[in-house]
Amino acid sequence: MAKKLIQSYLPDSNTIRDNRYLRFLGSTIENPNLWHLNRRSAAAAFFVGVFCAFIPIPFQMVVAACLAIVFRSNLPLSVALVWITNPVTMPAIFYFTYKVGCYLLNVPISESTLELSLHSVGAELSRIWKPLYLGSLITGLAGGALGYFAIRLYWRWNIISNWKNRRVQRKQAHQVQSHIPRKK
Image 1 (cartoon, rainbow, N blue to C red):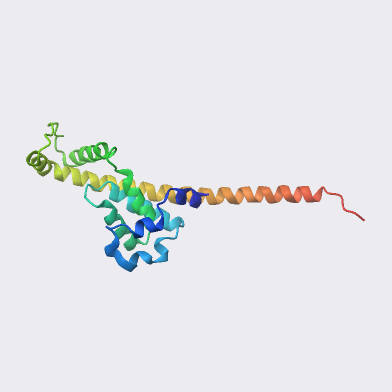
Image 2 (cartoon, one colour):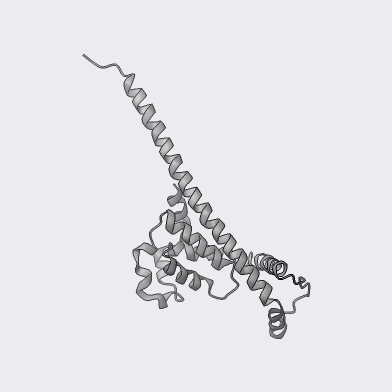
C-alpha cells in the first residue's frame, strides 16, 4: 500500500531521463537502484527532496538529483519533492526560513517593502542572505529529518497492518474450513 501510494504520485522515468537539466548525469541515472522504491530509498528521498526544497537556490531539482545519486535514494521521489517550494508556496516558506535565521542570529526582521528593480532586489538580498540561508539550512535539515522518520514509521506501520490483516484473514478462512462438514 505505501509503495503503491507513493508510486502513484511519482513522475515517469522517461520524464526525468529526458530532462535537459539532468542530461549531464549521463549513465549514472540509469542505475536501477535509483529507481527502486523501498523503505530505505523512499525515506532517503524524502530527506533529500525536502532539504533541497528549503534551500533558496536555482536548479533545486538538479541538486536533488545529484544528492539522490550520492545518497542512493529514489531519484524520481527526490526530484518531485523539490516542488514543495513552487511559485505559490515559495514566498511563505522563504519568509519563514528568514525569520528562523533572524531568530538564530539574533537579528531584527527587516520589514522593508521590496521594489521590483534589479538594484533593489540585489541590495535587499545582500542584507538578508545570512539569516535566509541559515534559516533555510536549519529548516531544511529539520524538515528532511522529519520526513525521513515519518516515512520510515509510516512504511513500518503499513507492513505491520498488512501482516495483521493477513493473519485475521487466514484465521477466518481456517474457521470457515473447520465448520464445513466432511463427507464420509
